[in-house]
Image (cartoon, rainbow, N blue to C red; front, side, top):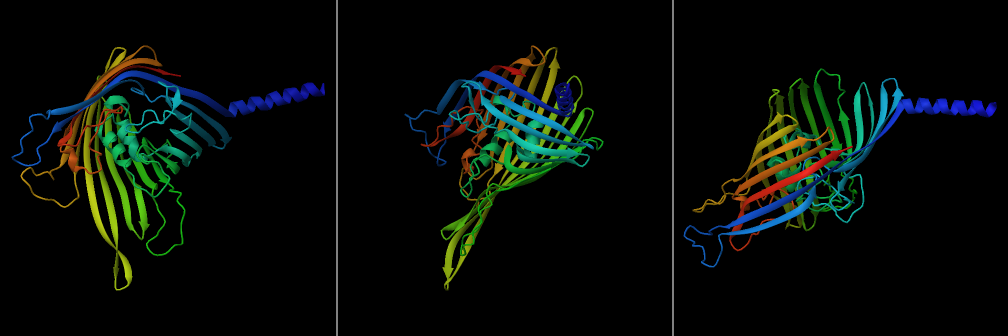
Length: 436
């Protein structure tokens, strides 16, 4: 009898625990047949240069691949919530990227980032634990940055596949040119930040929402004197504030990422990326319109060590490059399908001293992209899709970081050197997506 009572009590406790807690397994498997190509054209070095007879006008590279994440990012995740009572809840979220074309883990769905196709499964998309209540939510771990949210939410293609907008592609390439000074991986702090502390406003503010994030650089501090100083590479600070009500959604964000920070007797380098963007969407019913404006400033301070009268100091030079971009997009429901289209443009303005020549090569570089696609929903979880994208480039060689040399995805870059400069890129995706 006592054993029966103990068993019934255990079952009752288990029932209460299950009612107060929940764990969900979820994921997306997305595969596509994709093609990526790039073209470079010969550029004259002087006003009167003549193209050599044996030199072709253009140089091309292309690749056809069984790719992933052309519509939604392939992933596998676990999330759970425990009701603590009194309006409090504790939650966790572990989400890993998948390269389902090879069966291995990786940062799938991240534009411009090379995936580790030899690596195992890792929770590199999101890995957080949080506490929420009437005050909002405090979230710790690896998560999306506030400034990336606008790039993906107000993109009809959701920054996936060859249709990923130029603002996102170029920003991601810019962050990948991070300098030395930390174990933080190149490309971090644009899409996601590790080691972050995030705060989210509560959802009951009449449509207003917002978040703040601070990511620790976790570099070791040193007491060395002279030109040495602790590196802050990897630090990110940013916030986002918006309003969503009915068909309208509008949000602005600002963030600063320290891409490089070194100082020694050999010299110094500080590189900070400051991002501001403003995005909006409005659903009219027959069509949903998207728009975004973005400005990114890449400020670099380089110090050269000098010694005057036995006193050491650094002679600093500063350069601030700007990337101004905008996006216009639309989605149109058609029966069980959805037509998607976008036009995006980014203009680069160099902060280097201007020089004069007949070709005025210090003129601003520009990149333009048009993308169009169609999604056919076979069910709520399964869809077929097709996307086509074209990028045109102008004077991208003025951008010394190479961020403006944007492609539609895949591995082929631009064949340069010998008087050739990047000119255009084309890509397409044909695929299937299944969510569970």
